[in-house]
Image (tube, rainbow, N blue to C red; front, side):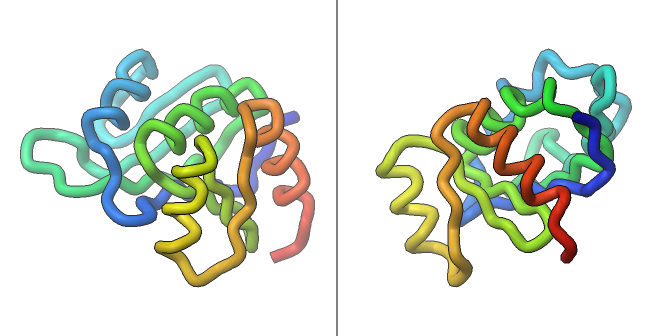
Length: 126
């Protein structure tokens, strides 16, 4: 599966920037753009003094789902695609995210489940 449906990553309160940096450390970077085989991820600035995190995956594939899951889980960010809002993590993380947003929230149990949710959302009209 390859998709051009953009995915956005937004903090539900304030992202854990240390965790975000750690998760993204192994991804090839050129300025605010991160690249993988099919991945094109545009991120907010993550340097010294950064206060929060947001990103958009302009191109992605199923192979990127484990990265997205860890980014969302560890970084405390939500994943949005079309009208779906997805949270990743344990029950406590999901409950905290639900308390912070007004929209319906879909919980992803693991990277494989996230991949299915993203594939389903990518095919739905906005």
